[in-house]
Image (tube, rainbow, N blue to C red; front, side, top):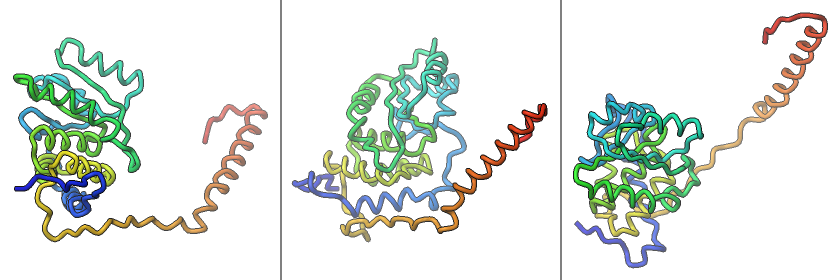
Length: 245
């Protein structure tokens, strides 16, 4: 298999691979593949989870997890609770504050930092890391796929197929799909061109504006709330203590 990328990789957008990744990760195809429980093992040293299940430290210890990589933000209180859960476990934790939006450069902002952390886990004897975000789909899905691809030197489509097989619903964010494929170009890990996919750019369809009657809903809502507040204030001024809303 030829894992090399074109020589002018900085100018090339691998549209055929991006289209294939979109099909591989289509939630309409993969909804029945949802695992019975998380975390799931992507590789012997790499697991993927959502936020809820990564809070179960006893289960993580049972699974042999030595490190946690959080790729979602957290409030100070949330982080405090998380650190309290970690006390006494011996599990090493790192957090990067990634956003799950279509215009967010997850790879550009966070991959280098995540790569360094994950490489050390892979090289550690007995190391096992769980990567998570909130839902365990987009941010953590991208970083887990990138880690599998780069640290194992595996082609991008094989990596995505493997992750979908393990996790089911993963990597729905389309800009993250493109970022993963662009990283594959940079790392010379595109692999063979997928059969049946061309290099024509993807034209995103902008959804139509809402109907005119929907635009009237906000002023109507303001009028309703204003009227309701006025009526409530009148009742209070008359001595009523009712808090009906």
